[in-house]
Length: 354
Image (cartoon, rainbow, N blue to C red; front, side):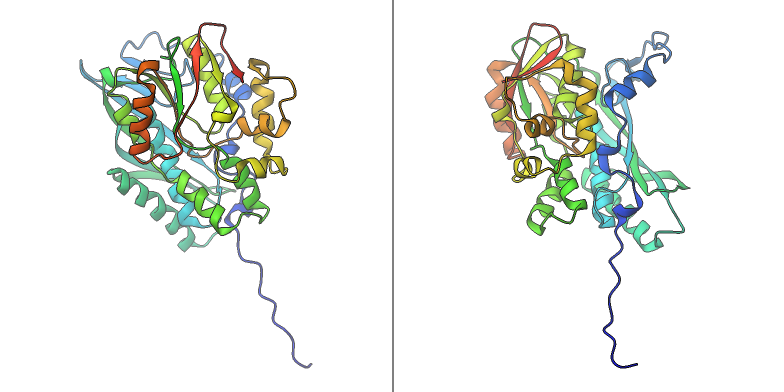
């Protein structure tokens, strides 16, 4: 039959097994609010310090006069194809909720769903090992977990932390005049879109992994500072969505300088080039009527501010006279992209983009 050239099969892509990836597969803010609208009131539990009332990052329960327990869970489908990187990103993202409340994580439980007939055991082990490596970096064990056979790969953690009650920080504590600091650049969603289309080069991929596996442990230190009034982490609802949760919970209007918002190095180019995710559009449809834009504000830029962040940074509200010093401390702690992006003021809850 003569010589035949062997054609190597296409490499297996973990993301091909999932219809969405990372925090981009979260339910939209509008859908989530509708689902939670008729949940029972928490008034019968006086030691429950934080529940579902303000869409905060985790639950907090007082165990004595000085200490509270923080509990959260977060999981999602693959945002990258390397199984170890997927595990690392998912674990970093889940632990972030405890840091955003000002807490110290103490242990985690793995949450795992895998299509066992489609994925090799060694890939599953790599996912788990990736998650465990981040937990080790955070100084906590993976003390157990639960797994199921699922049609799409899912991985994440339930994380338990503790916190001095005096240090507990919510997303609803911002005060008029507070400066707003964002600790990481945005653009994870558009990077993920470029990755799925095969258009993310090695340099940009390394940047994506670096930001999504950077633990938000600075939240523990920020919570010790009385001038820091509110903290939340920026994930699937984008900087606008999580900023609006802070605005609503605090009963304030936030003003954000668009040019001050830190971006991943190619985020603007990817957004302008059409790599906007479907989740950005869903996010905007959920809360766009609470955002005030200047005339002629570009659509790609508007949707980049709604870009879903997987394992994004912290949004911090801090007294204005301490803002520069707190920012310097954040940068020194290993968050070089951190920037002051705006301030809070009296007014009906909304975000004004300047």
